[in-house]
Image (tube, rainbow, N blue to C red):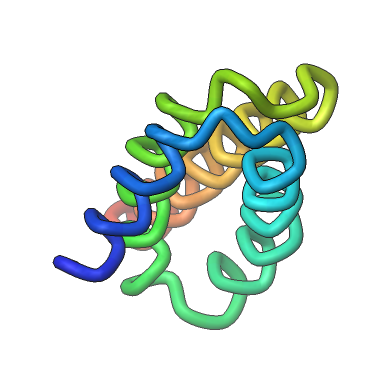
Length: 88
């Protein structure tokens, strides 16, 4: 947890377009796999990704908004899955 917080602070302070854009792309790439293969960890990961994305304001806007949408869809997917299991 502490390592992720430190990474977020470092990236938020960075005005490096490339570093922030790469991090957004990394979030896009990892999210689907994490949600699919480790739903319990996914909830933690998504909170961390939300916090991280909040400060990546210098990233390429297209990639940034795709990362936001990816995280939003993952949250929705987890909510739907929980709803299905609770109704059984």
